[in-house]
Every structure is written in C-alpha cells, then in structure tokens.
Amino acid sequence: MELQSKKIIFMGTPRFASEILSDLIKKGIGIDCVFTQPDKPVGRKALLAATPVKEVALQFNIELFQKQKLDADTVTLIRNKKPDLIVVAAYGIILPKEILEIPTFGCINVHASFLPELRGSSPIHTALKQGKKKTGISVMLMDEGIDTGPVFFKKSLSINRKETYLELESKMIKLSTEILAPTLEKIINKEIKPFPQDEEGKSLTKMVKKQDGKINWQNQNAKEIFNLYRAFHVWPKTYAFFEKDNSKHKVTLTFSDYKDENHPKEIGQVFKNKDNILVQTINGTLLVKTIQLEGKKELSAKDFINGKPAFIETILK
RNA sequence: CGCGGGGUGGAGCAGUCUGGUAGCUCGACUGGCUCAUAACCAGUAGGUCAUCGGUUCGAAUCCGGUCCCCGCAA
Image 1: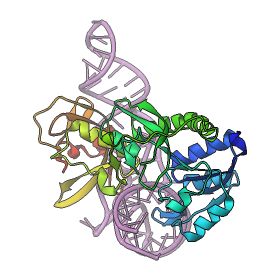
Image 2: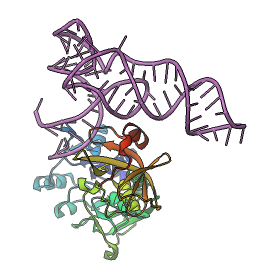
Image 3: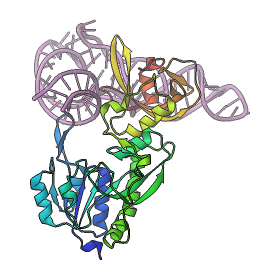
Image 4: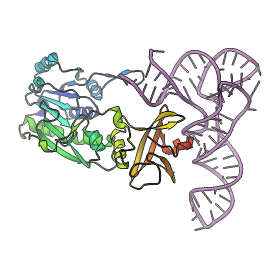
C-alpha cells in the first residue's frame, strides 16, 4: 500500500496546520483538496486575511474550500470525492458524524498535546500557561467528541523553562512533520491500531480570548505571570493598566525572566535595579524586556524608561 | 468613510494650545581621572522638525492634502 497513491483531503487553519500541509506535499503525498476557515477581516482597515493553510493551498494550486459550516451540501461534496483519508490539523470546525464515516481509513487528527491531556483548541497556549515541563503530539482517529478518539501514536516533547509560544510551536511542528507521514503509512497498511484514551488524565483547553492576556497582579506570582507571557506573547499579549492624570492607561509588557527574590515594593510596582527594570509581584519579581503604551510602538524597557523616567515607581493594576 | 494616538540629531522623549533661527535623557566620538574596567568629570559631532502645498514679515508650532507607524473596536 502506498501512501502516495491515496486520495487525501486536508483540513486545517493556522500555521501549525499549514506547515504540516506543506511538509506532506513536499514528501510527495498528493492532497486532493484542502478545507480551511473562511477569510476573516483583520486590522484597522478590516482587510480580509487568508489563513496560512489557504496560502499554502494557493501556492501549490490545490483545490480549496472555505466553508463556514460543514453542512449537508459539503457532506455530499466530500462523499463524492471518495477520499481514502481525511487529515485534520487545528481546523477549528467540528466535523459531523456523516463526514467522519466517509473516508476508508477514517479522519486522522494531529493534535498538539499528549492526549488525553489538553484536548481542545489551545493545547500549546495552555501547556505554557500551566508551566508544564512536557507536552506532546498525538495522531488520533477522530470521533464525535473533542479530541476524544482513540490514539494511533503519540510522542512527548519537553518544554524549556523560558520557551515561548513561537518556539514551542515550531518544535511541535517539527515533531509533527516527523511522525505524521510514517504514522499515516502504518495506518493504511493496517500496521497499527488505535488505543482508546485513558479518561483518567483528561483535560480540556478553551479558545484563547483577549481577556486571557490580562495580568492579575493580586493573584498571580512572578512565575505565573511569566508563563502567561510565554503563552500569549503573540496574541493577545500580556497587558496591565496604570493610572495617570486620573485616567486609566493600558500597557503591554513582555518579560525576559523572573526571580524568586522580593523587594520592599508594592505589588505591581515598577522599579529599577542597576540597569534592569523590574516589577514586584505577590511573590517574586519580573524582569521587564519590552514595554508598549497604547498608541505607541513596542520599546525595550531601557528606551522606554529613558523617555519616560517617571514610569519608575508606577503601580500596575 | 468605525474610534483614537503618533512621525523632532543614532535611540527614547519635550517643545505645538499662547508662531519669532530647536531642548532633555541615552548612545557615539575626544580628552581627563584610574593599576585597570565601570562609574565620574570636561568637551565634540550629529536634525531639510515624515512629506507636499497654503496663511504670515516670520511656521516644528496655524490651515488643507498625501504617505507611514501604533492602540481600541470588529
């Protein structure tokens, strides 16, 4: 049985999916058509932005579908394609039972966690936010639940202490591309069988929301805030507020590290120690890397303080 | 036409309301001090004030157009 000769449909949306798709194509595995989410308005001018998966599909001239919902017509469309396999990676749209039953070898999902941990839509973010030291990639047979199907193959991956979202995502993509094609090969050759997940260690992750990036100085210690930054530095970023001239301002922060030591400062207070800009938390201090005020560009902490020395001693809320 | 902030020496800002030949901090360079480094002290260089046009005796500053950057909202 040759994987290259099978009819495969790919479904996915963000970079994690697009990199996997282009890797499959580069390995000579034919993709019959691609499904991705519709273009969404982005930015100040509300321009429509293509998903990363769409860009790859266009680049390789692969038939593309952007359905809002997988309705009855879509089911018929897919059924008529008679696919051997549907490969799904971070698609963001739930596949109805009718579609799951179409492909000869089923719908195979690449999920960015060591299942049954971190099911759902934000496995990479949540692994970082929780400060986990290990996560993984799972290749599974999809069923009607959210990432609940039996797993063909999974491989773990260690997370470094200071690793951020982009770095971890890149590692995840690399690992996925290494294991996916060989696993698919084994699946169509019926060399491996999927094992049901152990419901014991299950957890579910939610969609990332704007609010997730807000720093809660009263409840989060330095380590937790640093993990928040590692998880959400791409979006929605980590932000806080401070008061000046009787109005509330938003400030977006990034951190280069944290320390367990404490200083005689208020919670959330910014201060300077040698050349470092630090923030005191309920336990531990954060080393500030960049600061961005609303309406301004992102600046290194040093440049920011140079222009606004009065920011020192400000209390963030 | 969704709302708002901004573009001033290499970097970050002030100055704009109340027009009158550009200022602060950092950096760079030179010299001093020092066993030496940092620090510190003295000095030097570096700006068509995004751009185009208008008002004016005179525009970074007032008025209008254009380009670019950023936050919010979606």
